[in-house]
Length: 163
Image (tube, rainbow, N blue to C red; front, side, top):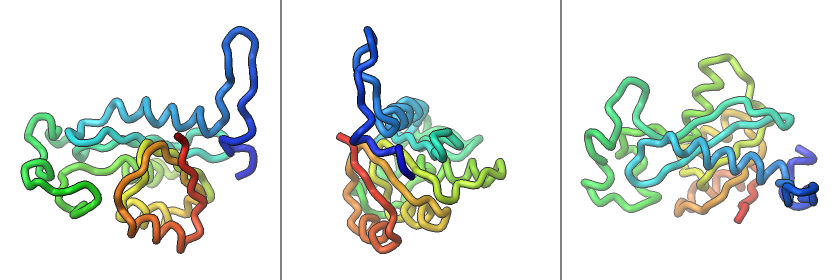
């Protein structure tokens, strides 16, 4: 999607200082969304954007109606599961998954969209991103999952990391 790159749109605006690029703007919103997370290990937020419009949001935590990990504990912490491994050992749903599921639940097409996320997706989320037809991924932080990076490269998903 042209015009969404974080590289060329920063400009001065009067007394307010520097105007953020579209990528900076949307990644900052993903950080705000992450504040709803109930995960004890990592607060993650994601938003799906198309044509500079937010389509869906998601954060990580227990499925709707379930007790939060803050109430019942963390299976991954209790089992000393390292980051980037054994994703199935978690009662929570990931932020990227929640954003994609919300699109499906409300009949919103996210094909050819951009996903902004506070963290690089795991391999499970990468496969969902690929099958959802998301074409671009912008992340704020890395995550130790080499399979995810390989899958996204093979699918030719454009990936950008904002620091």
